[in-house]
Image (cartoon, rainbow, N blue to C red; front, side, top):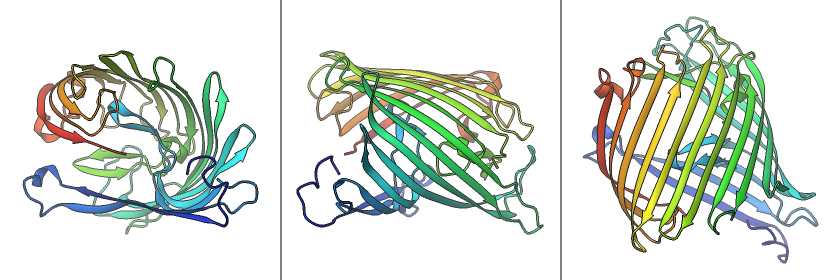
Length: 360
């Protein structure tokens, strides 16, 4: 709820949030028989309950919790979304304070020291996170958000009595945001994150990996750790030109005899606004990874051209309908790890189609 929105109201102010979603798998895209419906968000909050702090609110449910992303590659680098509850928007000094408990649970085969898990032999996993944040405070001409997360992961046993190691971890994240630097809609966001053990995902969920077509939980031993830095811009330097950028560097030590991993990703999306509603977007990107659990390493690059029609001539004008054509290429070291089974023996390929994007 916007700051100051409850200060003139008497009594508690309740709000309920509901989001529905549907998904149609690619292999059954031509029929609605396989469509799956879900409720990614269902949570409620109550504000105006603390004297002198009308905007502070308690909440509980399942929600997208104070997440940060880089839009052009849909990368949520800090995303503690999940089910839980807490207190947020508590005015403190020049900023606001929030504290939350968020939990997650899943089943997976036991993975240990790069062994191949048995997908028919599952154990339960649980993860509990306590997230403390201080945000919206002035920092170097912009605003800051700093967060400390404690995460605890526990494993059950499979039918042979084997269990993964339990672990605890701490994570520290700092996000700096500057708005209006080039134009009224511009945004520059920089983040630095470091964490060990189960906190190193920077999410409420688990580290996962794919093997033989299945997805498995990868336990996070206490001596595993990760450092991540991101930087991205969205600006409109000219009346006819918008620009979005992305830069990510990540270093991970998995702590299970797997190789340490470096990941570097960069991309740029210029959008030429030819009219108030028609534009052409061009996006180029490159990713490099030093090693993966499957032994793949190397570089992937891609280029996309997309004519698009939108409700306005800004980078984030939505809804937008776009046609697109993409070419991606990768080296031999990435062969078999890109594009699924259709591209298992290839080092490049094309994709094209149409899509609609909208949000509010």
